[in-house]
Length: 266
Image 1 (cartoon, helix red, strand yellow):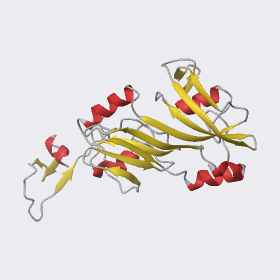
Image 2 (cartoon, one colour):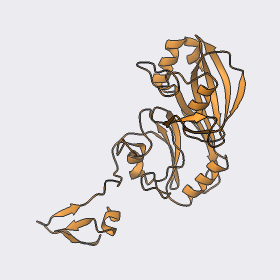
Image 3 (cartoon, one colour):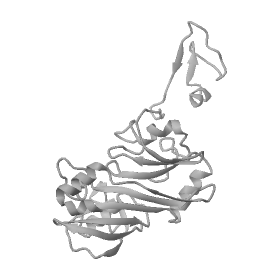
Image 4 (spheres, helix red, strand yellow):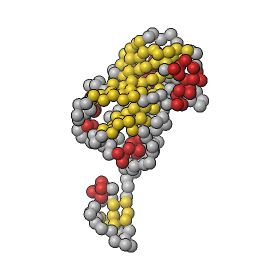
């Protein structure tokens, strides 16, 4: 509201007024909210850490991170505006230093202004933030450990998708945890953070993420089996070593049991 007042978009009886103006009975207050403005919304999002500089959220599946085309509201950013997230030049992405896909659940760190935002962005670029995912992929026969080193960029045949072999460098490490019923559970570590990186890389080696509607095969009644379970970094202000873990959500655990009970033991 203070921002609306500062740019003369909140009027009293059709006239500009300062933030300290005391409204009298019978007066009309009009707010002209631009379409690109963000408004806080009462969307429940679990927090696993919060202080005056940052917060770490456990994003539910189905929640888009920030407003954009087709998603003007109802996002993680709308849910956390009242928590003080801020930083960066994009007014629709305050405090957002990395993202998760809509149907990927799990841990995200967001900034509450400077200098936390710029330092977190720098740490991401310097690969100083540990990000660990759990995934079930189609197929078996993967090595115990492996690395996928292939650039990722816009698919030249379909610009709404990403593709391996073009674009910017991307590096993904994986470790096999279990294999059963023609599916494999992996622990995946990101060394870079390209859009759809895990999904594109695993699909490129012939093992798409289970129930991936974009780079694999959709499964009715199931969502993408991908969860950001681990996040570790130094606090951008205090330098304290921080490490967080998120348990596998019940819907993913149920899907693993449906495939084979042994996959749910991890």
